[in-house]
Image 1 (cartoon, helix red, strand yellow):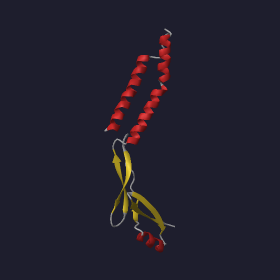
Image 2: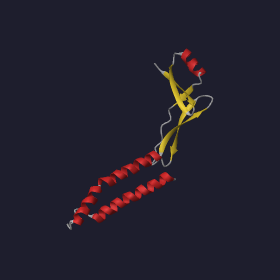
Image 3: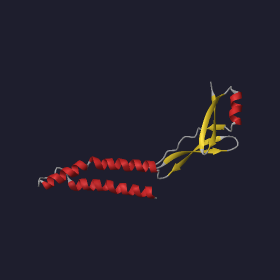
Image 4: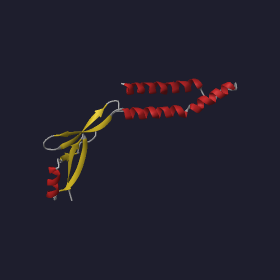
Length: 136
């Protein structure tokens, strides 16, 4: 059995319901309650690394339709990337500690500390860059 999709906006939030094609009484009831035909066929767009596709709704006399807006510098995506980079730093902390221990014991360092420092500094620089995006 096919159904028709209906929606209305309540305080900016979309409320949806569906009605079987053959239930004209229910359709009349929901239309009287302010519901309109709803078109949710819009596909989300392809987004970049720190963009997010956010659903938005256009309402007119005929109905409500879904559309997508692209949000630049999505705080959620930037925060997730910062957390990932911080985890990457934490994963190499033991190498720094071990190298320091070997230095104090006047033994040959087990890691290339110059290379390790450069890698970790690049991560810290990227974190700072992303934190700057969040502050904008």
